Image 1 (tube, rainbow, N blue to C red):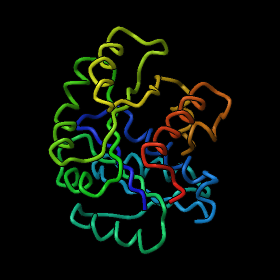
Image 2: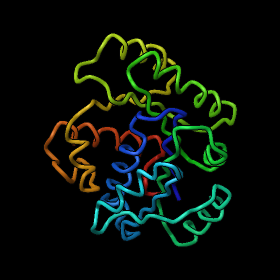
Image 3: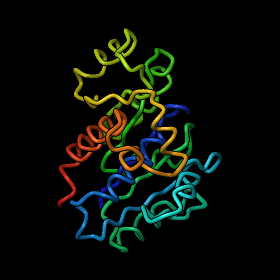
Length: 217
């Protein structure tokens, strides 16, 4: 089972939006057809429960939300999901330091760290990057909620992160389509496949798969 975790010790950086989109796209991925396209979600943001809310808004077939009430239950839940035959599990974490972050870093095949296009956003996620480095976790950074055209701040962040091979090439712009799709619990590729956000998310999803070596294994 591939475990993809969205994490950043900062709120408002698109963790839930990316988690929902990646999960829905994996659910619709032909490469997972032999597994009946089964994808599961785990929402570890107990205070906000945003991913849980998005799942409820969907109201149709899609990824399965696995119930969890305590951080300590995470290893058992993941083991249960693996036994159940889920090929992909997407985890959304809280924008604060919780006992789950270290546990998730230990089990995730890929940790995705969204960062906004400002110095404050970058400083806000530095503790997350430092923790992932200490744990020797596999992680990548994605520039999210950026302007439609690349700003000077975004270019500076790219210059800082790209040489280390940590940065996804695709950046996620601030687009209305993401907010509209979330209203229905959908990925933007389901809501409006031809929109710019759909093209952007498709490129990002392909990069995520590439970072994992594909979903065919």
